[in-house]
Image (cartoon, rainbow, N blue to C red; front, side, top):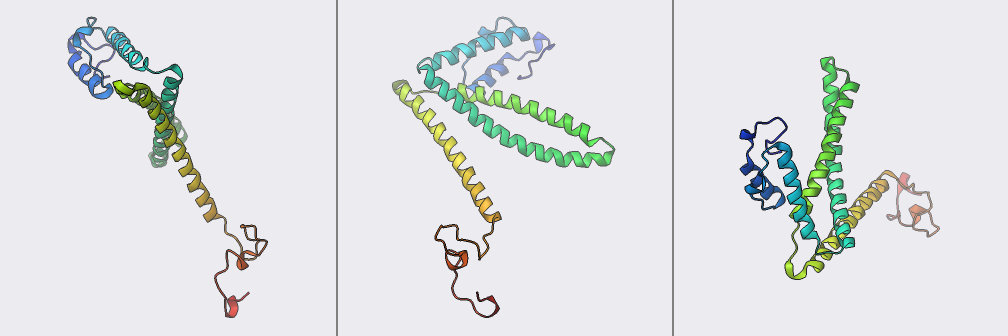
Length: 210
């Protein structure tokens, strides 16, 4: 993270860059003086400790049920977005795997390797984006409870709207696939043939007459 990894010499650790990243990504104001232990493990533990304390302090103003609802909704929304992107990447990867077969590479082995890498990336993306979103949430001091409730309600409504949109698209798609024959019973329940009810389009002449 931010060029800090196991084995890096302490003199190469850029704490200023780390602090800036926390500010830009998580909206957290940290001070360099907090990191007296300049080892990678020490920096990781201290950052986790400070960020956890800041998050707990922010969320302490709402009751546990509301907090749980907010965290759950953000997680599910993040999961939904990341999963869609993952499916798109899987489709793109399949195309690339077929091309690798021309280079004498086993497509099954390549597919297993790439799909595992993409799944690992998916899990990390869900974790990171969920934590990031939860950290950047800010409540107005004068109406914390109301704002938290409004946020949870908004996310719930967005989820329901998305589910409805997907259901309508699926219904439309299924309707396009299923053609109604003119001599079938009309689906409106009138008891008439489709051609004499909802499928009626005026009198026909010649070979097209009933």
